[in-house]
Image (tube, chains in turn blue, orange):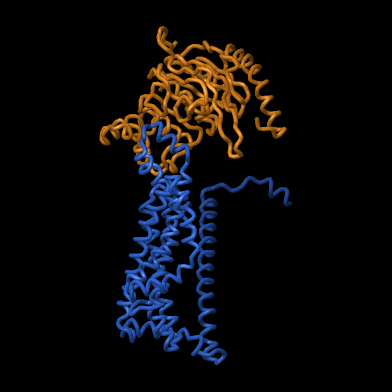
Length: 290
Length: 274
């Protein structure tokens, strides 16, 4: 019986093929829906478990906070402002510090990385110092910057710059070093001089490396700003965290954390767009993952 | 048939030796006492075993490398660095991934000081000549391997090089695409007066394209023997393989080449380097 069935030619009529395609489509949709449901379920279990444990008295809301309390805090901050002034002001300050640190760090990092990548002597002379600088735990510099530059934005920007610089530097350096020798030789044969080699071959080639470092470096710029505010500031999201901590307001710490995450996610999406603009020749699949 | 008598050769190497310093600080001789001449408009193919200094020879002619000993002359002038006479097609893709097809082809003229607008106009013409009209805005990663080779070919030829150096340019292509490209190369070349040095592993490719096939020895490389290929032109590389004379050339040259290949093979299987 089964032998007979196998011997039959497959049904290749148009209706049968359409039916198969529809079935495959439906399978894809079902899988997609299941993934979404599981995603939401994880959130519900974690947050619901947390909220439930607090309400049932298993854990102390004073130490661990409470999701509903965090949501209420965020709502109060958004609608009525924080006890340290309007929320948007704090967000704006942190974002401004982050963007400034990011921009300065990227520019200096690219220039320095490019110079050392292009010049062997420079690399040999300054390489060890750069590695030493990178070995310093940068967060400690935050204290020094606050002594030097005060409680204002400058100290936070400086801290952010020291964090972003090294990431961009090493990527730009590596990018220039790893330029495909065939491309360089091809450009030389086609008639490129040293300047054209630098700006028309080396730089675009390193740009792939540099742009893929932008995600990480923006994250570090944000860390620099927040840690700087945490150590000593009069404004900013890091300052909100410090203030909430000082008042033993656990929900406040978590609320500031949630707002920070949202800021970071928005920034990351913007960096991804910037990346696509800078390297339009790269296929989407080659970009770094989630 | 392209050769012109009574002039100095387009390319000449006199007793050229090239030694490299290896990372382990020993010296490796890639080319030894190599002398050869390529006439104006001649299509010359170099065959030889793997790692026999064929690519090094091209680098020396292009001026990408300087010889350790001996003299390299292009159009009668000693080669001192990369000059304006040579075009070079690399084995691996060397088109710029961040430039679209048109800008890739326009690169040479722009580097050589042609105004951007004029360079792009010429590039558009060359893109069409290699059969890529309509693909001007594509980036290399959106093209097939064969199309990228066409871009590389246009990129080289737009500079109107007097000598064209080709380092196994079609090795990575599938057989059908490769035959197409070989025919196209012959057609484009017949419209120029360029001398070609074409390095390949593939003896059939060498015989079907070239006026002369040079057999290199195992490393350190030197010229073993030169075979003039007096098959008629214009050639079709697919059809010419059925010519009985083609088969005779193949047998003759392969006999010579095989002993060198065997030497190289035995060395590599024994793990010796040089």
